Image 1: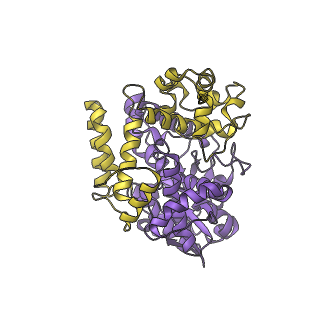
Image 2: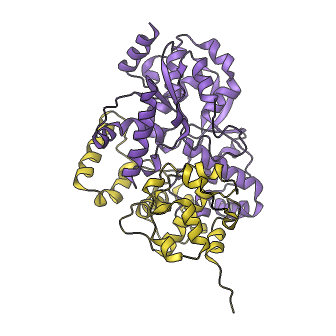
Image 3: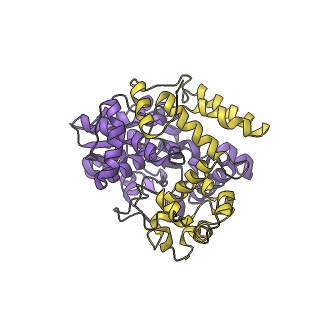
Length: 187
Length: 288
């Protein structure tokens, strides 16, 4: 019979390249939470989330906004006395929740990341106006007007180009991507 | 003139155009030859990693592989997010033959091969370490005397670099500002994240982070905030009006790239470094 992996192990397994110290080394000191500039916008602090993973609270972890509120500033990572790459763990949790297709209602992060990767597969370069199409529908009317004004200002000041750039060897890049993940046909 | 493989990154072609302009102008002035990589792709900033880790490292590796092909030794990025992605990927490639094998299998499709042998550096490091502060000081034509500059490091230029000792209180930016005659101010938020990667996905949190940073710089009587990253620059400059609306504040502090300040000090023509008349007037008024 197959051995069922602990939730901790599952998350550690998808932190492949970072080779960080295992999450189970966490001593629950809270240095991460105290260092986090975005902690007040999180449902659970980083320390709590690590505790929840250890306690196998999978549904609760999938329902929290914590890792989607992480700004990837790595303050927790460099300060963790147990040497855990916490910011990288937040990425692992994002991946985990995207694979499960399960995340807190109303979050923009998952759609944004997906749209971003699709944009890269289609052009090789990032281009802000294409991305706007994915998140603007979720903005309030006031935010959309605000965003429009900001963008118009940027175009007028010459800071925002009107046409996207593409890499020249796009076909090669797309074949490269297919060797990593099965993405099907691209436009 | 020493040559460097230059990876400008997507932002420097759009929102960070003035950064690219000033980076190239200052580099030329200091004898740093930046050779732009051919056919580079987006590094992914913070948006690849939530989708697939191996894909993220592979796309970053494509740029590193193109750089390795040039035969040059240094991979230079002016954007902190590009820099961090290239730096960490390069390190993993070097230390993990298994990961490198996976990535090289994908890179075959573009006839590339990567070893992780580039020296990945942020542009500011090239100026400070290779050109040297003394040399820069010698070339200053118009010292930015009396200009109180808040050096804003942001996050990814200093973290997660455990091999550098100064992650908590780095000083290199202050030293560079002193070398061009400006007065670097000390303030607590200099390495606190600006929230750039959240500005789209969590506007409320991002604006709160920008607000705290602006307040701190203004409380320290800074005349200008200097940045080393196009994400930080846009976030702190463009969203100031939204912060004002949200928090009832009245911030209107100029935000400039460190290369623009260097360009002004080196006496480079303002339009070649994307500096407007109002900023020049400010620098001149503090000098008197």
